[in-house]
Length: 69
Image (tube, rainbow, N blue to C red; front, side, top):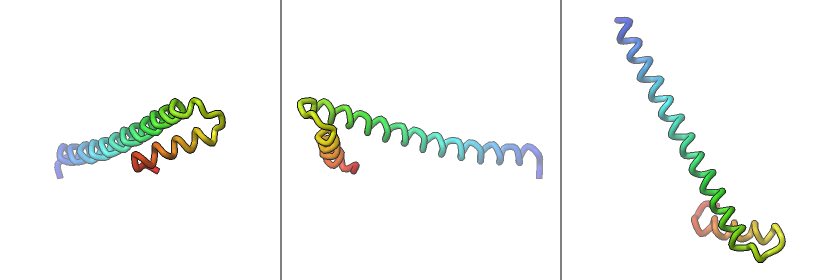
């Protein structure tokens, strides 16, 4: 086979793998940021509560509302 064709095939395989990893990384970042936003909302909602257990319970209620956990 021609050397140019092999280079094009390898480059396309590399680009496909890179795009898949990039999409996975962006998905993980969005999930982590969503969890952080939900945690902040839970803390703000339960700011009158004193214990950490109430904050966790409020976060769990919000997460189940969004069907995340």
